[in-house]
Length: 145
Image (cartoon, rainbow, N blue to C red; front, side, top):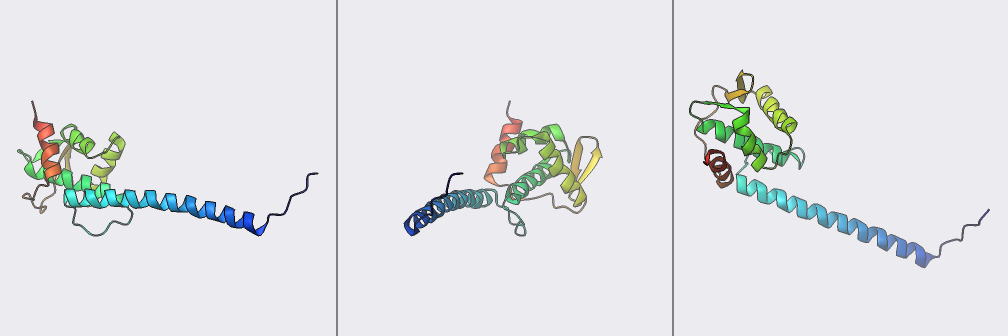
């Protein structure tokens, strides 16, 4: 049976420094991600209550864009297929995530499902909203020839 050689104080300190440097790198990556989230919030103009989690910032951004798009719709009804490129432009990669956004908004009373795949703003939701540059750009993408 091999014997375990006791570590010296110096070896323990070197190992602790390595762990701290690894922690520091992880924290620096987290700071970069938080800065990206701050920039996204500033660009899209999301001004609702503070999200519970950092990942909620994207959800709030997407939901604000959906509301803006529906506010601009004539007639005031839009299909999920028309909304899909907009949310893709904002970073949503899967249709199930997109459907989850729509479901949450319906449960919150923001959206009404007129028929399967057709959505409109619920009564009482303001139809005139300030449209952020990112939403306008995504909307231009939707309506281009």
